[in-house]
Length: 157
Image (cartoon, rainbow, N blue to C red; front, side):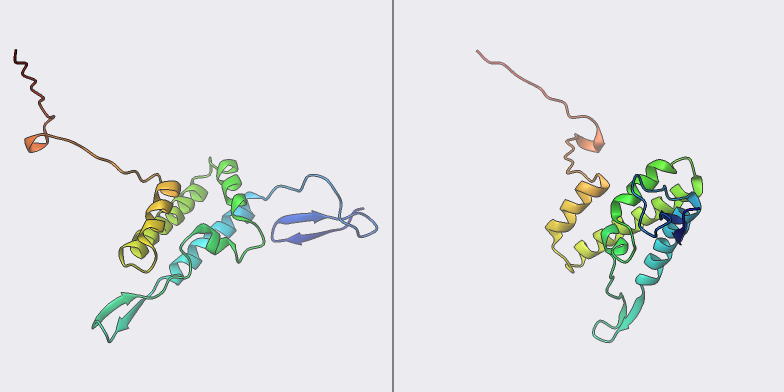
C-alpha cells in the first residue's frame, strides 16, 4: 500500500520506497479550500485596525500589510493562481463565492484608501484598479439636467 503525507486536505502520494509519486497532483478538496479562504478573510479583518494619532488628534487606519492577494498568499504553501483555479472549480458553492467576493471588495477598498491617502503611488493604484477590478476612465457628455446633448448644425452658403 503506498504511503502518503497529508498537508491540510491536500495529499502528496508516495511510493513504497518513500519517493514522491510522479504524475498529476491531487485536487484540493472543497473543505480545504473553504478553510483557506476563510483564513484569508480573517487575516484581512485582523490586518486593518484603528489607532489614535496624537499628531492629528483623531483615529487613523494603521499600516496595512496586505494590499493585494499576492501579499496574503505569500504566507501560504500555494500560489495566487490556485485561488483562481478554486474560484472556477467551486463557483457553484455560495459560501465559497461569498467569501471570495468579500475578500476582493476589501482588497479593492484598500487600494482606493492607499491611493487616496498618498501612502502609495496614485498612478500605481489606478493601474491596479483598472487591471484587477475593471475600473475605467469614463467620460460622459450630457446636456443640462442630465439630458442628452442636442447638436444643432447650421449650414451657411
